[in-house]
Every structure is written in structure tokens, then in C-alpha cells.
Image (cartoon, rainbow, N blue to C red; front, side, top):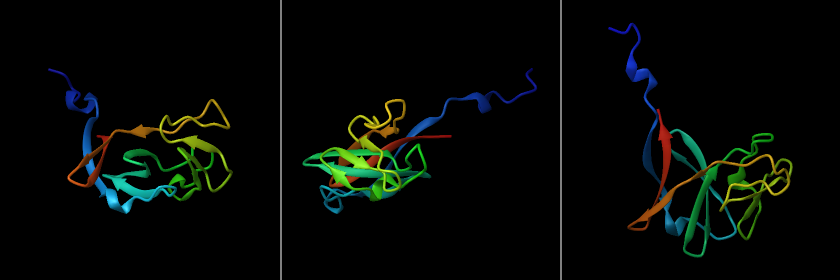
Length: 116
């Protein structure tokens, strides 16, 4: 018998959380929400909805309140720009933000994150 608990080594599972209603999302503006305990920034372009981590990897700026142009959001602290479709940083190629799967069900936006 092992002295450790095998359950401690299980991979995190994924769970979907309702973060808002589609009609609460405005093009050209982000929205900050929680998917469980994960803070996400949600964006809308036409019928497409995207979710990324809310914190800029450079200085933790809240991407959900940054200025939006097309599918790019700028960090309000230091203007690093991120494509929320890909997560890529347009100013510092070695950085990116996490993207999260999004699903719309009956007018509600659900974001899937890993949970422990």
C-alpha cells in the first residue's frame, strides 16, 4: 500500500461557468467576470465571443477594462496589446495570455476553466 494519496496527483478537471448574458457584452468593450475562481476578460465581435485571462502577464493590468480595437485589447497599465482570438501579445512575442473555451447556451455565456 502507498503512503501517499493517489488522488493528489489527479489532473485538474474542467468545468463551465456562466459568466454573463450575451446581451451584456458590447463590441469594443471588455467585461470582467469570474469563471469559478478564475478571473476572465470577455469580449464580443459580432456573434463571436472570446475569453482570456484578465491579468496582463507583464504587470497584472486588468485586460477587461483596457481599450479595444477590433480583436485586440491593450493593457491599461503599459499598453501591451493582446489579440483575444489567439492570446498572442503583439508587442512582446514571448508573452501571451491564456484563452478559455466559450459556449453560448440560451443567451448565456459559459466559460470553461480547469479546476483543482
